[in-house]
Image 1 (cartoon, rainbow, N blue to C red):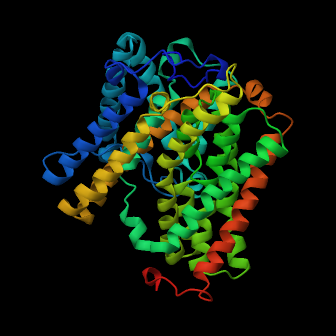
Image 2: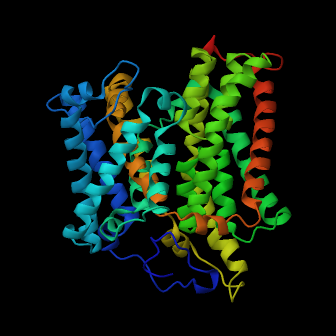
Amino acid sequence: MSKKATSAVPAEASDIVTTDRFQWSDLLKKDDWQAIWIGFIIIAIAAVSVISGAFNFSAAKFSTWGNGVSLLEQLSGGLAVKLIRTLLVLGILFGVGNKLKGTSPKTYLPAFLGLFVLATLVRVISAEYTLNRYLEWAFWALIVGLVISNTVGVPQWLKPAVQTEYYIKAGLVIMGFSVLFSNIVNFGLYGLGIAWFVTPIVIIFMWFFGTRVLKIDNKPLVITLSTATSVCGTSAAIAVGAASKAKKTDLSLAVSISIIFTVIMMVAEPIIIRAVGLGELMGGALIGGTVDSTGAVTVAGTALGPTAQTVAVLVKSIQNILIGFIAFAVAVFFATRVEREGSADPARKIGASEIWYRLPKFILGFFAASLLASFVFLPLVGKETVSSINSVLDQYKNWAFILAFTSIGLDTNFRELKDQFQGGKPLVLYVVGQLFNIILTFLVVYLLLSGKFVPLPTLVG
């Protein structure tokens, strides 16, 4: 495999070799390792700021404006200072990372400033009163990038900062701190049954439906879209896209389809659940297991009521824990099976060292952050302090994701995206897979939470 394996463009199976191996310089120069260091630096500073109370490390967060609330009041009330802090923290960390990768700061930093301005525009748009009620910032980040890339085009000076995978990997490491294993205890076997039993079955179903029935040749696209559908949308898509060496166009397509249907399901699912009288407990669990985005799950659950919101977020949180495991499994599966089938030497065995080399290392950072929060910070400083740390980290994670989603839009051309549809097959794959996901999740939810087969959980009364 080429040493440029951190690119989203996959090597063909016939090009896979085992001559390149880990070098100590990779710890400083590769995106995956840099994402871990950046994520843990932010986690460490946030933890110190909250526990000591000596300084404020909060990133900028736009409250809802419009409908009588002024945006200018937020800027004059300390938001401008937080914006500058956010720009400096992320600019320095990603700037140093790019310097270590060989990109001149004179080239990267002006580009990053331009991208950050676009990301700020996204935050402003998505915080507007009406828009904020229906669409998440991820949607607007993608739209802003798409509009620029498909109209005036992305200026040359901005392109060095368009690094989708880099930002999302760092964001996922930060996100790992919020994925507490205690969530499994909180909802017990109910959450495990809904989130962990259904998810792998849906992935396997979509894989076979996409490759055997629809006969889609682009297998990284199939597995990326399958995981986005069954786990948590864009975060899972990017993690598995890296594990399967999906192209940027594959990732753009999977994310675009996921976001569009997330918006539809976020609005429609609570209405349908209320119409059929499913109730908050079962309805919240169904939303948590089928709506892709965590933010959309929260909104949809809230529309049903407080119990539905609690259950929906718990199911989605438990489901999110699977991201790392699934990405690892996909990396192993593609290295040992998929790429061997298309190789010039399909009988060649791929050893553990090859699998390790190909594994997205930022997934290790995701696991490490989750374990650190669950088994070190939670016992030492308590749930409230960990929650406060996560409140700070959540915004840095969101900024990293906004930079990533804006980059996806800037890096996506509609003509290239059209070529990936292969006669509409990816859309058919998503629709059929999501319908299967909804039906299977409903059956498991009915079995566990209807009260007819097993006792109801005490968590929600």
